Image 1 (cartoon, helix red, strand yellow):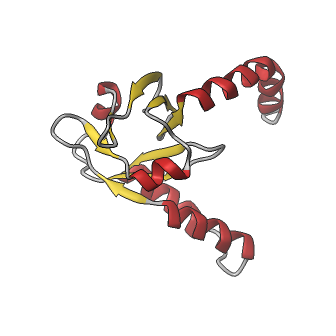
Image 2 (cartoon, rainbow, N blue to C red):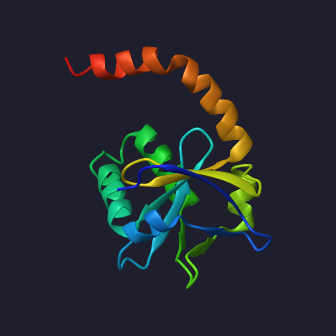
Length: 145
């Protein structure tokens, strides 16, 4: 399970060290998938969880235009990478540019995957989210009743 947050730096060769706690979650899985996240981040999945995401897409009717367009956008964003011997992944420059991610990043565990955010974008977003936390939590958990 990916839980916690970390601030890291992407080096000059576009490599990012994955926090050791998160590296342990990959176990023997060789493939790691970078995808388009929500709200301007990169989502990172281990293979078994990425397959679950694909199954969710497959459970929807491809005849619906919203399904096709969302699936196309999602699949167009997928980049397969692997951990090197020092626990790093190489994030292609075009991916960093697409999501406006600079060298300073915030890594956030979101249970079945983790997100990579540009640090400044994350800080601005989180300041706004902190103001709305209680109201949003009430709405989220009100749906359970």
